[in-house]
Structures are given as C-alpha cells and as structure tokens.
Amino acid sequence: MQWRAVDNPWQSEAWEALGVLGDYEGPDEPRVIVDSPAATQWLYPGHPIVLQRSEAEGYFHNVSAAAPSVFVLWRMEEGVAVPRYVTVSYDEASRWMDGGAHVDAVPMPAAMRAWLREFVEHNYRPEPKKRLRPQSFLGARRR
Image 1 (cartoon, rainbow, N blue to C red):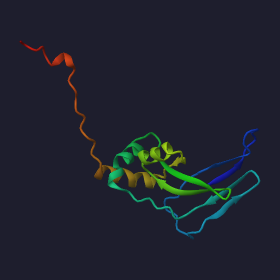
Image 2: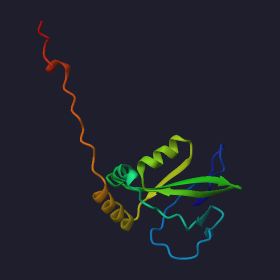
Image 3: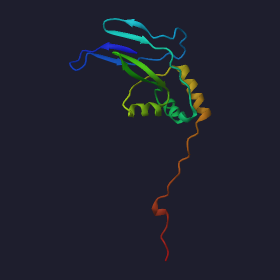
Image 4: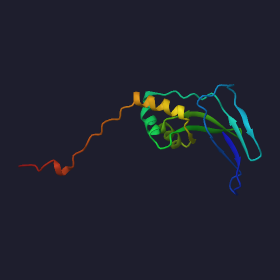
C-alpha cells in the first residue's frame, strides 16, 4: 500500500494499492519499506489467493482481459489504508465495488497469470448461448 502527498485544495493525501508479490517469502507482519516526505509504502504479507471453481467465470473475465489484474480491497483503519482481501476474480471485485468498498486493481505478475490461466482452462466452460429465433420466423397461425 502507498500513501502519497497530493497538491490539491480538496485533498492532501492519496492511498492506493501499488502492487502484489506473488512469490513473497519473509516475515508475516506489515512493515514500512519506503519512507519519504512525498510517499510511504507498506508491505502487507499474508493475503493468500485461493481459487474457487464457483468464481471460474470471474477468473476467465480477468485472465482474458488485455491487462489482467489483482484486485485489492482495502479499508482505512486508524488513519492508515490496510488491505483486507485480495482476489483475481473480476466478478468478485465488481461485487465489492458495487458494495462501496475501496478496491484497487494492480498488475498481475506473470507467474500468477500463468497459474490463473491454467486453472481457467481446466475449470471453466462457458455456458452455450441459446439463440432466440425472431418472431418473424415463427410463422403465421392458420385458422
């Protein structure tokens, strides 16, 4: 997560998710990794992504986009933005946003993209679309 100063008459600061590390191995506690007057960055480990078959369509929507993303839901807690949930489901992130949550999309690391694409290939089959015939093809009723 990143805090940065903003030169704006309506707001003095901005919070945003900056990125994710797909292969992080280290301490589980949050910590400051960059600290300057213009910006401060925190590393918040411990947000595993567990893929669910029920979200396969949302994963498909994400992985087939031009720029697949990881979606981070964060909340303000005691003056600091804290990430609470992370997903790679486009549909789940949309539901979060519809509920009014702060959600940022960050670029998906290449290894994570390959992992997600493999899951989608094995677990998602689009529903066949039923074609509705126009009324003009139904024919006239005979009396």
